[in-house]
Image 1 (cartoon, one colour):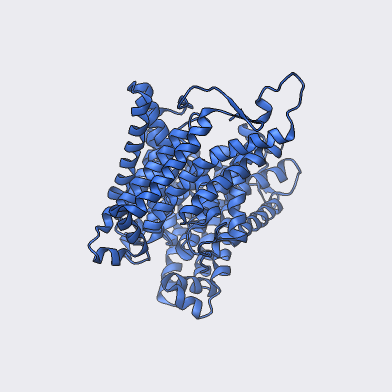
Image 2: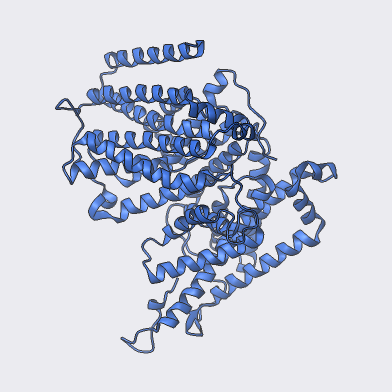
Length: 309
Length: 318
């Protein structure tokens, strides 16, 4: 991601002003933040449906990128087909995870179910490594890279695509959960599974939909972020961790919290990397996670104060 | 002493007898080395099992505690000329403190925050081991760690380390068993069975959980120190997240929360990648696959299954 010092100034040796630098950090922070928000929303969906922290959420992201890479380069499909297909195929993988691993599990203990998602995550990464190899792959941006300038910050069309598509995805989710029958049924199931089942809702199916939707959101994040960063079979670990930190920062389980937490984490990370040091950039999310748990376990929005045992 | 207590000590004595006899049969240094690695894994897994079984929490960062023990011991003795045993104790103390800092915020909350916090911690520790190369030696590792000594005699051979490592395992099992049967252990058991009742009876749940987490980290740290002095060279790759996953797999294969299960799981899974090249090649698929199948169909683990333990379908899952 271009940082201020990479941007060519008006002349050699002319320093970029501090204000311009700051604007640049904000642009890049919001862009990655939007992607974290998508990952955090995926965590949220599955947590609300099952109380399970889904460890494979980050791997949904890398699979999304990898599938897009193969549809585009391998199958030679145009972007408008390749990207939606990648998102749909990861949604299918999410549904399969629920159907083949979570639903048939003999134990219903949350800890065992979390372990199952950890195992699925390891298995998925192993498969990715053998199918796509260890090397870093790249995806082209959604439209040609002509940098634009606004208020001292330089940004590319991809920055706008990421923010725009994330916004559309969030609006679509809100519409889905508030206006459609399936969405309402999923919410009812998340609130009280037995009551929902008594009302004739197929609760297992709703849980499966949650996994599919979480897969789709993860894949979307992967397709959007890959042109900015790079892609490999193992990026899911760190992206999953950051998405989780974002969800906790916003207030675990809250949709609005996931969005706010994602953007906030992206900003904090970008500012810390720019103003302090970029070597330990990946450590920022972890420090934020511990600080939030320590100081304000309910998250920024404090929707529900962290239950003490 | 209760029958159960008697059974434990009988089993421990039987294990000690087998271990004492084993070097008579196994003289090949390669196999002795495998046994030594098994011992160190058993030590870490025993600690991890205390956490999983009694605090109901998962750690994906035990390789980091293992690694911290190894690096602190290695650097203190190698660079600063400390006496190895003193370094081992100091390393354990530092790791205990680190575990306290991670455990305090995460364990007082209901839910599974610890697992992500420890995963993140493991990532950071790996980055530090790689980045601080003037202290840690970077990716190529840290070399020149002296062996431990026993009354002045260096523990340098595979056989002498065998006695040390398995001695540590027996001691570790004994301590873990005592912890399980202590006030803390009973409190945690009550917590596991009926959290509200336990809290209402005045069990200080938060501090007990943190204590168990710290103890389990210390087990890993001691194993790490032993590892460093045994090999004399340590590399960051040995302590990455995959190692943490391997350790957790050992717990689950043997049986979560069962002390003997940990022993069984470590003994079964440690030599596999070394004996079967196929397993080494497809290591992550293999471990992930085993883990997935066991968790779905046999969540009580192999030892739990042999003991006829049934799956508790309970819990608060949907």
